[in-house]
Image 1: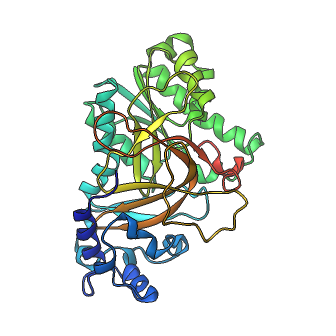
Image 2 (image 1 turned 180 degrees about the vertical axis):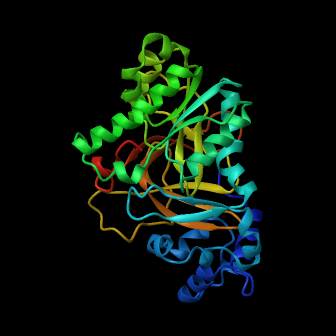
Length: 357
């Protein structure tokens, strides 16, 4: 599924309006000699802008990316930052309805499809602060009739500075897990929102009764390997509905809609009209900076993920991501884009920078 031409026309008109558009995109249009409102008519035209300037996203004032017409709405907007895995943080905003579409609405549909438990106590072990996952965790729990999650805050930028296995890493991990176990011992926790490595470490501290009490697990923040998936689903928490997601603070989240077959990777479905994921050819030894953004791979071919998100408040085109994946056949009705076998590109993501989130 690609983004509808009517939505593309609407969003391009907003961001490239000469009087009320966004300063960054108007500059890009002039720099490249384009007439965006005439030339950007469908997803196949996005490549004309080249890769998203992530350095500008890291360094320029946030208001440069928000159309002038929405600057009076800033008090109601939601600020999000990336985790900083591939460099200094990238920031963006969401209007409330955009935030819901990117993180909550598709979650509710996936949770309903997978019969995820409702009305339960959640424990969220992850970053709050500027990271959108803290706000989305509260909204996701409430969307299923639950109290906002009990929470343990993680400073993901600090843990990424510690070498895995170092004293600093071990002490901080112990600190996080001790807080999580305090909640598990004193509250009736039935749902966990956590990363795969944190869950595996936490499971080692939980007794059989505590693990058996868990009825739902949402895995987020890091790629889920087939081996970890098998261990979590079939050995540690066989009674829980395990529902992983793939995404980030900037573009939203895709969720697993169908349980994978044994020893197979999770598949994630784009269930958001403002989002399109494209897979382009990738070679680890290829020179950076010149990806072929005009080409889209066929099902079964592994390629690098390129994300496009078109919101009125913020436009992201050709975000070349840190992951590779394969297209899979759509699940259920419709022509939704489905990706599987998501893996981080190891030359970009060291074990130190990835940490536990």
